[in-house]
Amino acid sequence: MMNKLLLAPVLIGAACIMAGIYGALHDQISYTVSAGYFHEFKFIQFNIAPGLQNRLGAAIVGWLASWWMGIVIGVPICLLALTVRGIREFARAFLLAALTVIGVTLLIGLTGLAIGFLTIQDGNLPSWMVGREVTDPVSFARAGMMHDFSYLGGLIGLLAGAAVVIRQAVTSRRAAPRPVSHRSNGFHG
Image 1: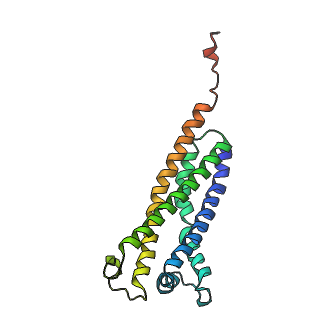
Image 2 (image 1 turned 60 degrees about the vertical axis):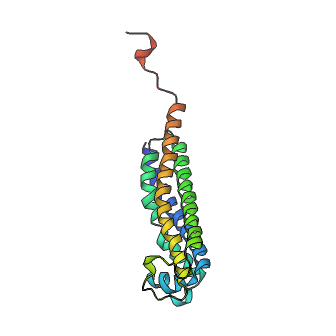
Image 3 (image 1 turned 30 degrees about the horizontal axis):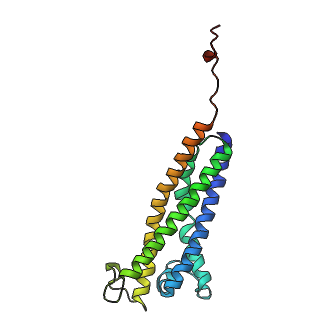
């Protein structure tokens, strides 16, 4: 158990790095959908210097908006993973769960983007767009929908990742040899 506790901060740190990289790449997609979403909202929100208000700036925004999700997702996954027998199995279960979270988050974020392309048109904008003065409201709203769905994806991904860890814990406990008790060997001495 002590080795697992020593490894836990490293794994949570790895989850932060994975979440930050995910955010940087995610925002490359949303920048493609709507550069205006960044120029008219995210670059201002994150105080990105004018010289960086491009794809690099979008990656920085993505990193800053996402790295901390590695803590939010990593801590509960790590606590659950402590129930997995063996240090290697513990690390493997954690990393498999983290990849599951990323996959689910990506899938749900892209689903949100697809829904945005199917439903958001001129004259059919979401209510949160009312009063926003932006250059291209349709693209802006589609990028915003992708971002909103991605946070929902993170929550659902956390549940899916937890299920992965629980399955790994059950499997590791079934596979691990049981300690032999002196009382069970037939001698009562």
